[in-house]
Image 1 (tube, rainbow, N blue to C red):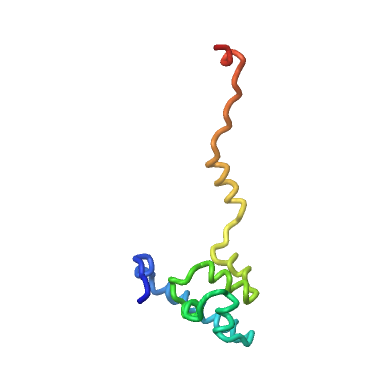
Image 2: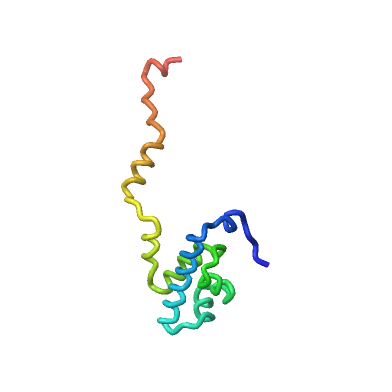
Length: 112
């Protein structure tokens, strides 16, 4: 029996449909490369059952396995489209959270 968590159980139908479509696209890529399910699983270092779950759109399959499968099929750059963001926004956010620089210690403060 598979392990389920509240986050998986609570997935909206739209999310499940998108995962199912992603699995179908992965299957189509595999078949286009004339690769069996077992061959794909072997190349991805997972079991055929786990790979079947990936193609089946199961939400419990790891993100790492998805990235590995996209790499195998030459589509790793597709991950960039998952949630695109302007990278410069990340730098602004990082600078806002940075600690302020310590002020220099004056000579009068060094005299005990």
